[in-house]
Each structure stands twice: as C-alpha cells, then as structure tokens.
Length: 119
Image (cartoon, rainbow, N blue to C red; front, side, top):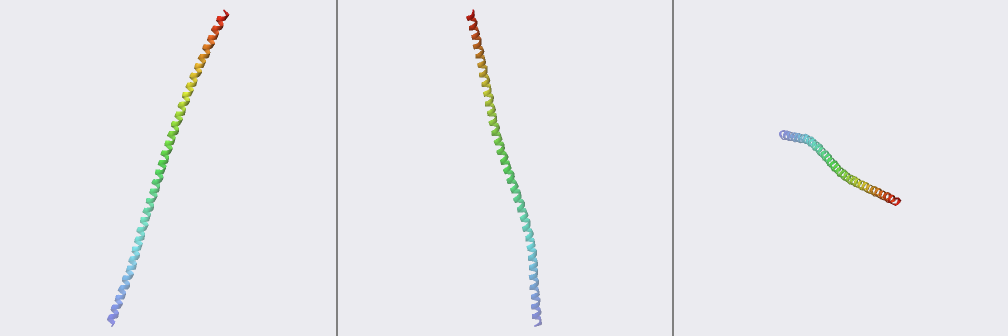
C-alpha cells in the first residue's frame, strides 16, 4: 500500500512538475511570441510610414509637375500676348509712319499748288 501511495505521490509530483514546466514553458513561449509580435508590429509601422512618405513624395512630385505645366502654359500665354503686343505696336508704328508720309505729301502738294496759283 505504501508503494502504491508512494507511486501515486511520485506520479502526482511528476504531473504537477510537468504541468508547472508546461506553464513556465508556455509563459516563455508567450513572451517570445509577444516579442515576435512586437517586432512584427514595429516592422509593419515602419513599412506603413515608408509607404506614407513615398505616397507623400509622389503626390508632391505630381503637384510640382502640375505646377510646372501650369507655369509653362502661363509662360506660353505671356509669350503669345507679348508677341501680339509687339506686332500690334509695329503695325501702329507703320500706320503712323504711313499717315505722317501722306500728311507730308499732301502738305507738299498743297504748297506746290498754292505757289502755282500765286505766280
């Protein structure tokens, strides 16, 4: 009987020890898995931050390209306006010169006619 009680006691102690070892090992496993999960979460946050930064850079690049296109369009419009203004000024100057020439010719013709009448 003592042997059975001793055997049961030893078996109970072994079971308790293995259960305790399982809990301790399980606890260690939980700590390891928690550390792995924290590391994975840190890596995921780093990737997400890099992705946000890359998206921000792409957005800024697109915005800068749009701004450059708009500025090029504005510059082309300014060039067209300046060209038209210069052309218009040249045409006005030509017309003014033509009017001045006609006025001078008419004045000369009138003088010549007036001289011819007097004599």
